[in-house]
Amino acid sequence: MDPNSVAKAFVEHYYSTFDTNRAGLANLYQDGSMLTFEGEQFLGAQNIAGKLLSLPFPQCQHFISTVDCQPSGPAGGMLVFVSGNLKLPGEEHPLKFSQMFHLMPTPQGSFYVQNDIFRLNYA
Amino acid sequence: MDPNSVAKAFVEHYYSTFDTNRAGLANLYQDGSMLTFEGEQFLGAQNIAGKLLSLPFPQCQHFISTVDCQPSGPAGGMLVFVSGNLKLPGEEHPLKFSQMFHLMPTPQGSFYVQNDIFRLNYA
Image (tube, rainbow over the protein chains, first blue to last red):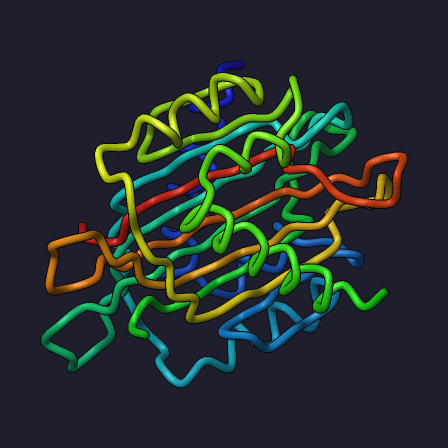
């Protein structure tokens, strides 16, 4: 399958899950997965999902501007780099963000998120 | 060595080389290295250096806002995620950018850039 198609499908799935059923994101991470969210580090699906569910906005909307991807090496991983806008409830202006994912293949032929780094671009 | 220190040292070296001796960046890439620059893809140190040297601004200044890093897997690689501002000559306002690097260890105990994805954050 074309890596760009995999990356785009993952990105659509990730952000639509984030915006409509955030608890469902836990399934995309594993025990060794890492998230760095605005400089704060979390290890493992449970801690990562805990962070994402505890964000102080129950609803939000992601609007994707760009998706870039590259293979990460011989283990079949894929790097996905996203830029976009995040609209929070009650806020008129969306926030720009960038996020990168390192996806690794599962034995079932799918991917999980090994690495996830998120930053708002306001600085 | 602390991964955060390695990441910060790499980032300082990379952008100071970019801003003062751009041709020197070629040494940081290898034949299998990949660059995606504003959506355009380049493979190999020679093509990557060619692109960076042909950018339509001979001088620029990078100002780093954030550096995040995570280990990428058992092969000893490291993911480095950077946000910052890029000041071009004659332009009053800097441009926000985000960039990610996947660094892989060399036999000499150093790192080279296996993956590099760059985006301006204007969308």
